[in-house]
Image (cartoon, rainbow, N blue to C red; front, side, top):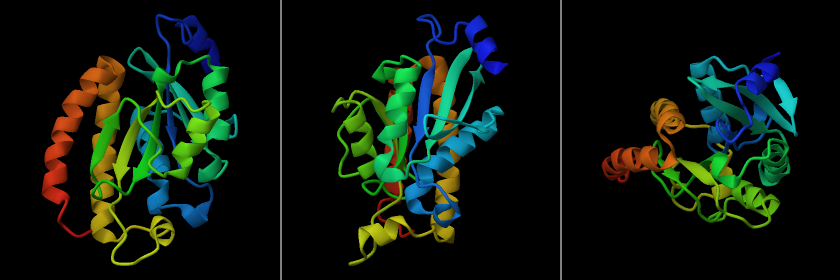
Length: 218
């Protein structure tokens, strides 16, 4: 079994402590392809790129595990609905005895232009209910990393909740698909070089993308 392979290779030892990547979203076909589900899409893109099967359920999440080179990684999509994401993320981190500096949460962010990404070592929830739930289940601790996936702001006076549950238009979809591939590359870099180096390198590139896209409609 794969878990035995993990144990043989020191999957949960101090030498090869895994990363837990958690993508936030809502389960079910109704929400597939919506702005609020880009965290799920990032998990799927990374899993597909590395040949990791997301075919089990663990701690209320669709779950997969594997190696990227010699780096062990756990992938999860909580099935609790967005506002209760912590009910899956917290138990997963506890089950694998992971410190919060080995947890990376992928989430949508209206504070970034559509298709712009940012890595962060930590931070608040910024009003994002999924992040708020994760923080609550970590007893208020905010020292876990995030991959922010920009979806842009709602146009005009549109209700932000309605905006989040809409699917992307063609232009935005193209930007998100490009961003997902950029995300895959930085996650591979993180697993080989660490969070600090990958954050510095990646955010510099994304800063210029932000400048280029911030006034362009999507």
